[in-house]
Image 1 (cartoon, helix red, strand yellow):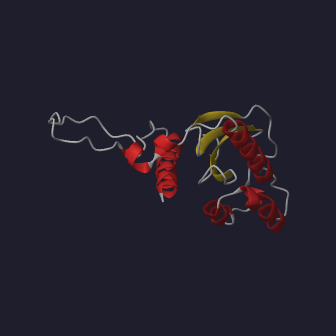
Image 2 (tube, rainbow, N blue to C red; image 1 turned 120 degrees about the vertical axis):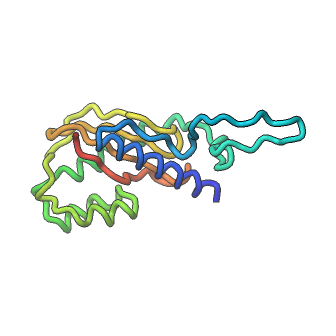
Image 3 (cartoon, helix red, strand yellow; image 1 turned 120 degrees about the horizontal axis):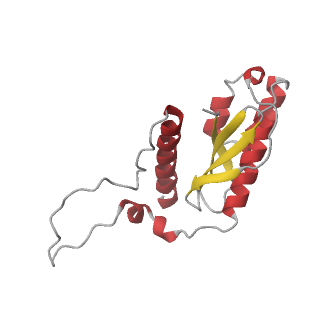
Length: 169
């Protein structure tokens, strides 16, 4: 249950970040961050409430040193599979789907590959941000500009998958 809450919080936070990036606005605070508020100092008899990240169990997960390389690899693989406007729709989805989350499969099934502007990965993909455990935003350069791939996994044992690929601004 803790992992699902962490995953859900990460998805919401990343969605806000990507939405902010796409609209040109500054990213919103993630669900685990709260605005600074004035609050009365706790008395000696009051126990402190856990922070949102502690309540979600984030303190239980240490960054995975192999995670960034694995996240970049799946992002490059997915963007490369995506950037093929000359491929028939059925083949395009058959080859792209295993790299995507179930929600992304549904979303990308509505795309006509003939409308995709990129045709090739040009090299130099890199981590833009991430939590080091379950989520990363990966910048993936293509011949049509740099896509931002949101890569995620619900647990350490699960494979990395791409939830969305935001086109260049």
